[in-house]
Amino acid sequence: MALHFAIPALWIAWCVYWLAAAPFAKATRWRESFASRLVDRVPLVLCALLFAAPHLWPRPLLARFVAPGAASPLSGAVLVAIGLGFAAWARRHIGRNWSGYVSLKEGHTLIRSGPYRLVRHPIYAGLLLALIGTALAIGEWRGLLAVLFAVLAFLRRIGVEEQRMRETFPEYEDYRRRTPALIPLGF
Image (tube, rainbow, N blue to C red; front, side, top):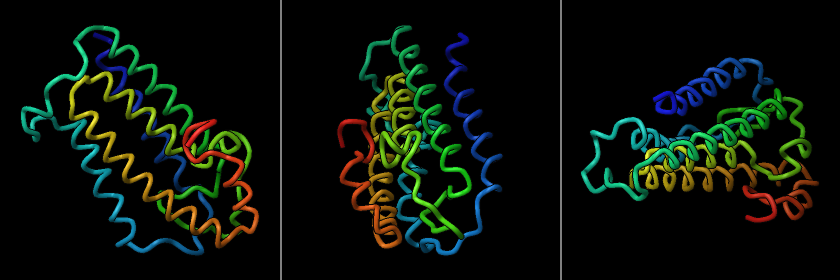
């Protein structure tokens, strides 16, 4: 029964940390437009609703893709903990350069150390791992659909971020060639 509360508790703790750290970011010099932010916010809201509000979705999305049992929730909780931990490490490491939207900060620097030496987008990588863990723990098709919405949103954001980084940092192209986007030793 404690496992039932572990995943929501991990997500809540992560949200509290994220909100507590947000005010310490540097001043913004440039940010993407509201319309641009909306394009990836909509799929992320759908992702959250698929996880948090199962009563909103048709019965086929509530069908299981894994058999019920203790292994899936336990494996899922471990993935959530690792993923959120990785995202929090990346958030801490990027420090005051962080923003909840694509932006350029005053005195922005290109971070290539810590988790950023493993992947260019460790926050998204960690969140995707945590979302996959959540989907596995739930074991229903709605969880996989939620992950798909998140992947679409993150890939779109990565494109916008990478364009801005290439325009801002001449050394970004070399970093991009040497460091995978989301999966160490891969994509």
